[in-house]
Picture 1 (cartoon, one colour):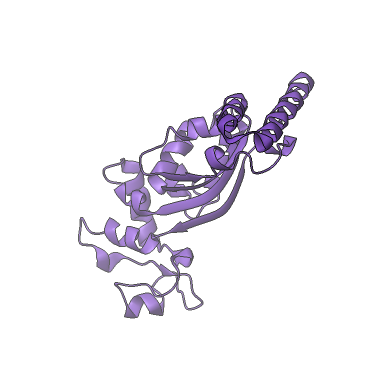
Picture 2 (picture 1 turned 90 degrees about the vertical axis):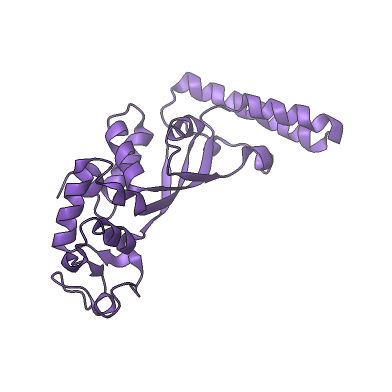
Length: 231
C-alpha cells in the first residue's frame, strides 16, 4: 500500500523566468498567476506591474502558450536544456512499506527525505496489522504476519518493564525482526526532473506502489513536462 498526502508544487515563476535566461527572451514570457484577472494571452496585473516578483501564491501560477511550448521543447531535449525542471519544487507526505522506501532511496540526487524514526519512536505504540502492508498477502502470509506482530508486542512489553541495561537487547530484537512490509511515513521533497526520471523508469514496475505514485505524477500541474503526454 501507499498513501500520498499534502502534495505541493512551487517556484514556478522563478523556474520559467530562468528558463528564458539563456536567450534573453523574457519579453516573450506569457505566464502569470491564476487570479480572477488572468487572461491566457497576458500576465495578470500582479505580474504586469511587478515583473520581477509575483505577489500571488505560486500554487496558482499558470503557464501561457509561449512558455508552455518552450518548456515542453526544452524538457524533451534532455537534462542540459531542460534543467529548469530542477527549479520546479515538489513535496508530499508518503506512507509506504520499507520495501518501497528501499527502492525510492535510489533517487538521492535532488531529493530530501525526512522520515518518522524507527530508531526513536518504534516503541511508541503497540504493533497492529494496520502498521503493515498486507494487501497482497495470501492466507499463509497473513497468518505469519499476525504471529510476527504478537512477537513484536511481547518484545515491546518486555522492553517497557526491562531494566535500562537490558532495554537495548529488546530494542535491537524488534529492529531486526521488523518485516519490510512495515509502513513508514516520510515527508519527501524533489523536483520535476527527478519526477521525470522516476516516471519513465518506474511506470511499468511490478510493484503497485510505483504505479500509484506514477498516477499521482500524472495529475500534477503541467504533468506533460514529465510524462510527455498532453491531454
